[in-house]
Length: 273
Image (cartoon, rainbow, N blue to C red; front, side):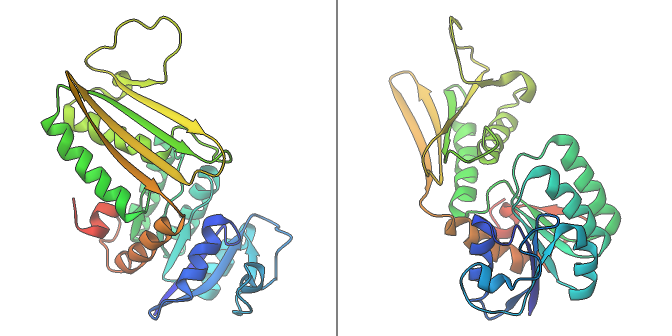
């Protein structure tokens, strides 16, 4: 039985993750973490998210180390915000708890800090900007297409709900990184974030990345390969956050047997690297 601690437990993703874990035969929720000094402290997370009593109280993040030591989860799942996630992952690593992380907006320096903590404490980790199975197949296909269509113009367009804090999305950033790596492009110089004014002709090296925000869009990603006389558009649309949660469940099963001290991603989880 895989014991799971969930951060952001009452949020959009956290609550769906908990509800889905409760339906699994091989895992259980053992801890629910919310923001420091949350007014939900002490309430049963099952009652908070509307599934009835599950005998797991909500704790504020200020008690994270204490809660992890007391409940001894096998894995902690984090879908929160970047600054909070760094401290959560470091604390989990110090407590010997493996992590599955879908939080986006992490900077290079934050990722370096996380990697160091995972290596030093020899925990297992899955970190991915998008846990949806389809998106990770999408990543594999755009990598293969970039090899073939290496002289086509490439643009990445993403759309999300109006509440999303970071832009471009972690998924769009990862798509850009995959394509830039495959084409041998300089990641710092090739990316163009939107366009405005008299920008002149498009260069052969640039890859456009564009963010749309509005309404309740769960997550749309398009990679456009435009050549002379034709174009190919590869599109992934998430209809529900359950797409991400289904990937989380796969990651939870994978991470308990993943290599220690190493960050795996969903390509590893799905065996499509």
